[in-house]
Length: 387
Image 1 (cartoon, helix red, strand yellow):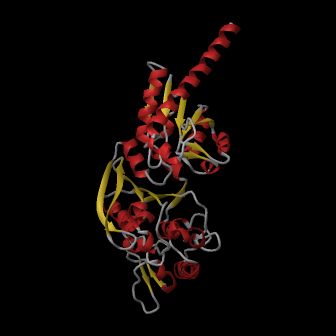
Image 2: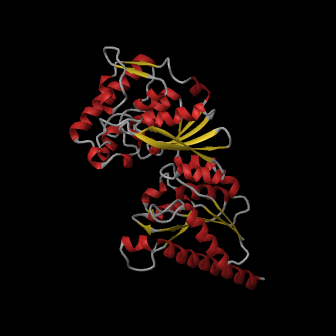
Image 3: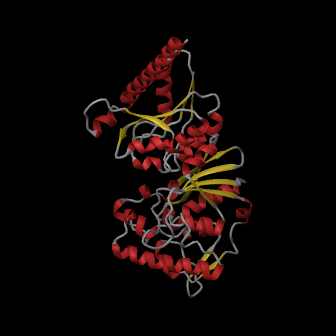
């Protein structure tokens, strides 16, 4: 009997590595002598670098970059397979880096994310996977591109800094200084949103409010984003305004695709490919995955759906051990997950559940394996009776 454990973290409580340890202990208790394997997994959001570095036995690179407000911060990315890097934009341009009282997408920039990309290229890395969730920015990716050598100019020919407020001022774009290593690079962007750059479903109106944008600020940014898109199209022939995913991370998706010719790909699929997940399925009898809370959204680009679909394609059953279940959680059954087991074993508030997270997870894991053992015993009994 071989089990494979591949769970997302339960934010703030159980890490992927903890889940592997607890599942391994429970499996050996119920199935003595069983074979187990585990791999950390993330969906392209928080924890992606950690999961990939851990799974690939890679390394961390830390360096000083500029944060969303151009403050000095320590950024990081992962290096693996000798020629590859995995980068989280949230490590340099993430929303949690901006104090609530200072959140205003007119005044934030992706410059630090560009610095991470630039450093990876300078290190000789040519396969870059970039997770772009959780941004504090709405600058159309100008800041990141400026860090890579592109100059955004106003009507007087003066270079702009690349904040959200600069979108409306862009009159010309000079790409002659773009880092030449970009042409040698294969860049994949982990993106699970399909929002265009502009419009009611675009970067500004969909995501700007959570970054501190008031209605007046959002209107200003939207007008600026339309100007930016028009200059890209008219001056450079780059038309990404209505491309699905262009609005991701405040328009960084548009810049990465338009200027760097990056490819957009599902976050969980990218991570599973990077860690060689399909190879890990060979010889596996059951996969256990999970996340903190499973609901209807889990069917769209989250770890359980990604794992479930890979397992379904290989004919391997998969189950989800989760912190809690929300509305329409059962939709995940259409994506290869055969059953869901919550860790909560009684009435309790969220604070108690978090405080007891490890205890509850361990208890639920044992209950899950005991139920699996019962199913196997029923199957064996039926086979014996037929024989």
